[in-house]
Image (cartoon, rainbow, N blue to C red; front, side, top):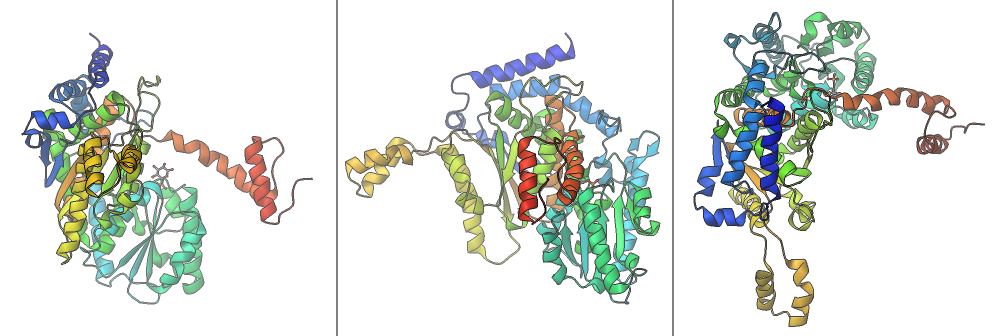
Length: 552
Ligand SMILES: O=P(O)(O)OC[C@H]1O[C@H](O)[C@H](O)[C@@H](O)[C@@H]1O
């Protein structure tokens, strides 16, 4: 039997189970097994991941584990760890796990000792951050730095910005972090009045150092530094994180101020690399190290735990069940913690850029759906916006609830309300409200029978809507590192199941290419016949609104 056949047979088993009547039901699984929580909640590091509120039955789980075996999840994982060029379209290794491993782990990418390269950079980052903290590295006027501005977009922004926001209570450093991503200069204009050029350290983060938005913003900010401090002094306020050392040099950043990383770090996996420098500066070295150590804890779990207890793999299998067996095309992420407000945005890039693929590794069209749409907001805010659709819309949307047991504030009542809401949402999705319950409630409230009959269909919740819950004992650098790495490995396992390359992103290229000529046409006028009538019409309308001449 060929591997392909084995994989297709395993998929067929999973899909057949999903097509059975009652495959979406969750309540009967709880009714039949009082130990369902105990059997479907798993620990990985400090995290508790409860997969019980899904319709994955024992039979489905067995079929899904068979699928993981048929798809070679473990073999693919081990190939990644050996530094094989598993990012086949770019012929690159994928070694973000080396970024958080000890030097002695000895990861290799081709001929290179990847672990040694990582630790050389970490040592330079640490020395730089500590010298800034100690006031040994200062701005052009001799003042200490008080603000660090990270200019970057996508993976060079979302991860660090998310972590900086999540861990603001941990920071021991006197530096405030700011993140500038959008090429929309309103972002810079909003930030500028809050920054003093004499006290601002500017980091230009770009893996490729060719990203238009980042380079444009970097030029704006460098001009602002130069205007205040003088052209020659501006470089004293600049550093860069990139794989493209030639381009950072051309931009005028001294080699001693450039923190490199290799092409085996994907942008959306780069917060652990030099791209995390803003975190080392704003949170302190110890917090950055604990973040890496947390991720390492999850790596060890992923690399070592057997499939049936391997939490990222189990999360991937649950997702495959939802997407492929049950046909649920989206997933919501609700962190019940305001500090994790940017986690959904980070996961959107991590998951949708990795798994938004329509061909297999071999280039054939995929046989089934791949990455779902991922969206989210912190709870409880989400409850007052899109959760209506999740409770009563036509298509179930599985939810990841992320709960933190112990807060970092003294307001116990607020925290109880927060957690109670998270638990209640998950319970409401599971239980629903039957017609009998809704009727009884309205009768108890004294509504007349005709009114009850009229409102009844609107007040019924179907229930049996899936969710999983991730419980962190406390939000700190260590547990956050574990949480983010958990999702990274879930993505890896899903890519193995779907046989797609999770590490390229060709889909973002075309829009970038088309933007260059359009920018020129916005300035100089449209080229006749170059566009569809919609694009041409909009181009003209914009120019008209800007008071620019229409074509003759
Ligand atoms: O870090 P950079 O090279 O500037 O790239 C920034 C981002 O832009 C690209 O378009 C990619 O889609 C992202 O994966 C990447 O993180």
